Figure (cartoon, helix red, strand yellow):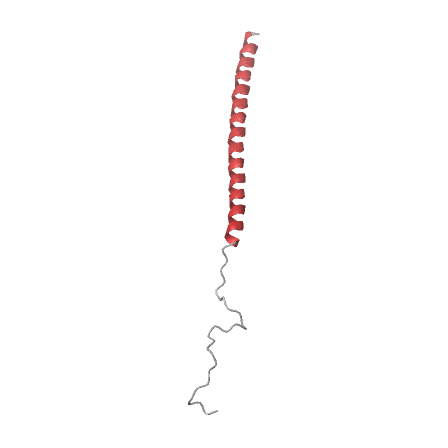
Amino acid sequence: MGERFRNMADLQGAWEVIAEAFSELAETLESIFSGVVETIEHIDREEDYRQNWYVPKSITLNHQVLDRKPMLANIRNSI
């Protein structure tokens, strides 16, 4: 009967080690998942921020004229 109690004590010690390992695993997974969620939120905010910095290459439209000189009569013009 003493042999059986020794095996039970060994079994109980093994279960305690397993329970401790699972609790450490849970804490580690929780920290990893919180880091992943934080990173995803940061990426989402960064994408929204980047969209505000769009600068078009051509700032003139097709119908705009940038070089408008006054239309004055030239003396040497053959009108």
